[in-house]
Image 1 (cartoon, helix red, strand yellow):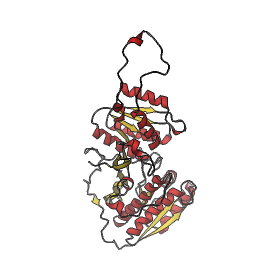
Image 2 (cartoon, helix red, strand yellow; image 1 turned 180 degrees about the vertical axis):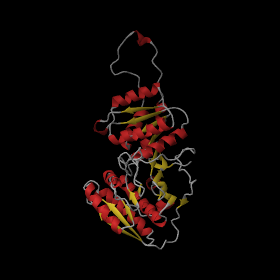
Image 3 (tube, rainbow, N blue to C red; image 1 turned 30 degrees about the horizontal axis):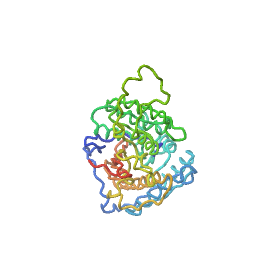
Image 4 (spheres, one colour; image 1 turned 45 degrees about the horizontal axis):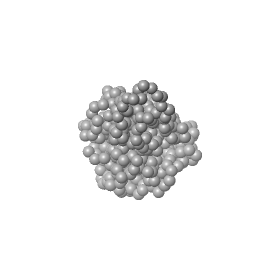
Length: 401
């Protein structure tokens, strides 16, 4: 979801894909079929359902959370606490929820999570659905009783860097972005992982995109640059439409004829060799879930492009995905709403496990990825490893090791 922030690195990609770090510190694997715990648990679900800007997103999370409850009630009662998006109002609602609930799930927005995290109120398990600005940086730790599990497109970029580095063990990467704020964040996340953590060479190119369309002259310049210095990997920090434009441009015939030729004595020299179209068309391209806008997108132009996304979106035969009803949203933005619905499902499952075992480390094969949670033993930690996918026959399909 563009705009989310990120958590720590995931996996070492040793098998050619981002890999979850296996539990070597006593983590237990969650068994969804375990008998009910018996002890009653009260969960407050704090969502900005009254917000003009976040109301639809909040409703998607709510629907997913209640789908989780419907399947695994386990003596759990859920109270939905409706708020707007003013931080002070949310703080008041959070404080009231603490009086009556055992666990609070929420808030949803960055600013609201920051307000709660910065208060002195967090005295019960609180599962935040986003990350505050600067999360993961020095001095930006959350209270010990707060666990942040939001979706993070920046974390997808880091995992894409791990995956690409495993697939292409030598050579550099070229990162392509526009001046969009969220794309710059994604590009920076990939660069920090690829160059900063892995020590691999990297260049970032920012393309102009007036009205959302990539500049044709800049695409011609890009192809000329690729002809001189071909990277091992292309990473697109852009969305699906612009990446599709890029892919078409790279696959089209490259001409070396200038629009306004200048005649000189060099005209009698033999022309430079034609650049094979395949030289560019077959460059491996990696990206994030922004490359998967859902049904109706003409994905055949992205054939072979690799991306990270939630199992909920690309792995319909996943054991957990199959047991929950699908959300009914369609149209523009429906893929992002579906991801938030999936977040709601996994938020319920994490809350349920913390209710059963208030302290410990566990792993959960979730509908949003492979989750590792450490809670109740000092500062909480959370890791999500998403599903690698590759465009095949016009749609992303799970990539297998």
